[in-house]
Each structure stands twice: as structure tokens, then as C-alpha cells.
Image (cartoon, rainbow, N blue to C red; front, side, top):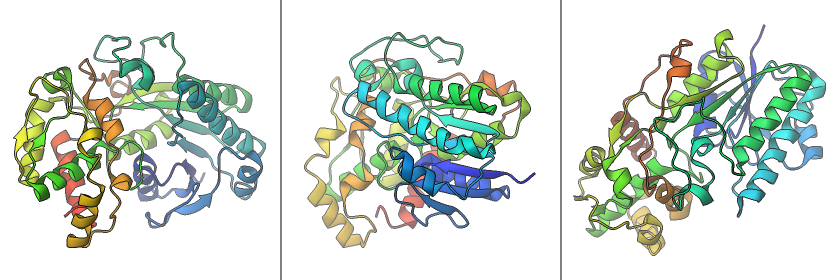
Length: 355
């Protein structure tokens, strides 16, 4: 039987990499986004608004996907609004597909806020869960839009009879322009500004993150896990953490990132120096850099997401993730984190997004 994928959020870091992965395995792949971009050869674009059930149904009218991959979300001002909007997106999508009776599997991408709590909780210290984080840990007694999205998937699966998988990455490393959460590209832009202005590449985060163990998720590795879970019987109806498979300390990695750009690395000096403040006056600086080097994106805000990088690097606890649940079911892919960053930097340079 032909595998027909609908990738929701196909323009994002995860969605674009997943689309390439599925296409490489011969899947017919549709990419849903509000404004699809022709970034992935062979991807069939679907323009739709998940918050508009009428237009969504019209956009999906001629599609009968066997597998649905939900990789997008919409950031709101409060967690209550995050819950309302992001659960509705999932509910509207699966309701629009229900009459087709074609869906065999739905994969939902969430993240480590499942364990750490919403932005409002962990940025202020919140609840400190035991690490490494494991899928068996119970939900927190906090409102969380990830829980609401999961519940929509569970309810639709019970109604329509499809299997599901939940995927919880740490910070995603990969290329995307205009993405809300983009640590790798944010650090590349920051280093490029430091290079151009003679500023040091100063660690912006907390002591706990600087000294503690951490891990990240390459967009290519989560794409592999999503494909694996969609085609593996033992992976059905399970939640999976997904990280590269190694751990590191930022105190080790930070000087290596600085060396790639040829800038001076400055480590934790006893004070948090948020990147949001550090880059707040640099929009004109970046436009000048872009003009000088003929870069493809002159708007700093389209490349850098310092608010999210500050949340990741400013956490008051070390964060690392256990991968046993997928490992024991046969998922063995691995990615060296240092190479994740260096591969991204090289791609950004080749695509004329950084000098």
C-alpha cells in the first residue's frame, strides 16, 4: 500500500527535514503550511489555516493521507491561550480528515516542556524534575498546551481507529528562516555580529547550563525517528524522547563554536547576559552586514530568536534526556552534536544567510 504523508508545519525546521526524509523513502508527501514555500523538491504544497475549519476542509478535500505528522504550533501570550489555540489546531485537522477514513497513524511533535512545564513555569525556576528526563514521568499539575494536544490525538485515535506516536525533542538544531525557536541559527547570527563588530562571543546563560550536562536534537535525527515510528509496529501508541544520543557541557562546546567563526569566546562570568538584550540594538548592524556580504535575509528578526535561546540557556537546572524507550524498540540512529552545529553553520553560509 502506498504511504501518503501529510506534514503539518512543512515550512519549519522539523517539517522541512521530515519532508526530505519521507521523500527519500519514496513517500508521496504533502506539506501543509499557511504560506507554503518551495524549499523541498518533490513536496506537494497545501495552503491552509488550521484555525479555520471551513477553509481547512476545502484545502484537504482531495487528499487522503495514510500518515499525518503534526510539527507546528502557534505561540500565544499566555499558556491558557496556548492551550486554547494549539489544541484547536489539532482538533480541527483531525476532524477534517476523519470522514476520509484513510489515516492509519498520527505523529505529534511536542517537546521537553512536557517535563519542565510551560515557558511561564520553567523560566522562573518552576518545578525541577529528576534528570535524565524519561517518558514514564507523570504529567505536571500545570496547564500545558502539549498535554492538550496529546489529548486531542488520543480522542481522535479512539474515535477513528488510527495508531499514534508522540515525539519529545530537546532544542532543535537545523535550518529554518522565520522560525520562532531557532537556537543554532540565533547563535550563528550572534557570532557573525561579534565577528563584524569586534565584540566577544559571550555566554548569555546560567551557571547551571554552562557547567551542567545537556543535549540537543538535530532536525535530521527527529525526522528519522518520525519515519521509524510511523513504520514500526513496536513503536505504535508510544511517547518517545528524541535527542542526538550524546551529552555535552556548554563549557566544552562554546569555545568550539567560537573557533568556527574565529571570535573570542567568553564563558560564564557570574552573571546572565540575555541575548534578547544583547541583540536588541543590532537590527541595523545586521542589515549592514547583509548588504556588505549580499546575504539573502537582511532582517535580524527573521533569523534570530533570542527570546527562546535565552529560555534554553538560562534554565536554572541542567537538562538531559533518556532515550531508552525508542532504543529498546529498535531506533538506533545517532548524531554527534558538534557536527550538528557545524553542519548547520556550513549550510547557512552556503545559502548566504550568514557571511
